[in-house]
Length: 282
Length: 88
Image (cartoon, rainbow over all chains, first blue to last red):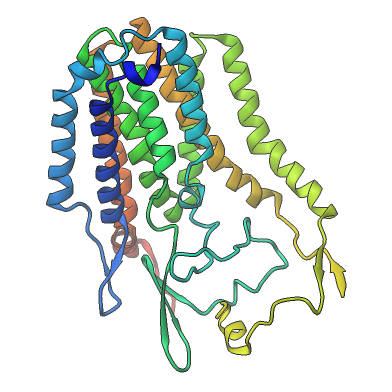
């Protein structure tokens, strides 16, 4: 039987659209907007955002009976396989540049990202000499003739594929719940984890690296604690994956870097002297 | 023409970056684990609702503190100044 013809498209699309709009609005609110005078305007949360969040919660609760019965004719195996694929898509298409703001300190012009030094290499100091003055999401480069306004690409959380995949997976999983209230709390939990958590993690990492590290350790501990009663083997696999990602992968990158050579020659693109002085391309 | 290896990565910095991937992986695993517990009945609806509210409030507080961090720093400097002895 065709999966798409069974799945009620309308409520699914409604939830995805609502989530995307709410997150986009929330992410825009959370960026530090610089006024005309260059002063940072700190706004914690506007009434519009609060009303939007309340409306989102009420809307989700109202359609939760539909969501709870969304995939009744579909087997558990199909849902499990689809959820795994969607969560892998979520991990693959996540906006890691936003989650790790130190990485993408390079200035972009009209939304295009310049090649940044991924992990602040020791010898490449050309980006460090950047004289740009960053103020929130707007970066102004003051040249001798004109002031160029550019925007950092990582100030707004922008991962539509990742977010939609995660919310869709949570919808599929929530539809296996016994009651609609269970479905509602699971979807709300998914929205908190997949949509709002990255915004909080971004701001936390910008302010304090130690806080970010503590957050990762707390989440890791919670995951181990909750996963252990379910399956011991999966817990070991998860711990090994985290150890590999955190400790072994950086070592591999560092080790393999010695075999990478950068070739310079007359074919290199010419860089105007003024642009080089200001640390950006013209 | 020159053939040089210009970049040298710091292990500590690369590890700090890869922590972000681990964090996202942990988030996914945490969600799946909570879902499995809710499905199995270990966590009931009320507990799940309480967890939702706790995470939302905690996240909001952390976010708000991060957003107003300079003001908190200013406040902390004001508070701690009376314990500082100035020697001239």
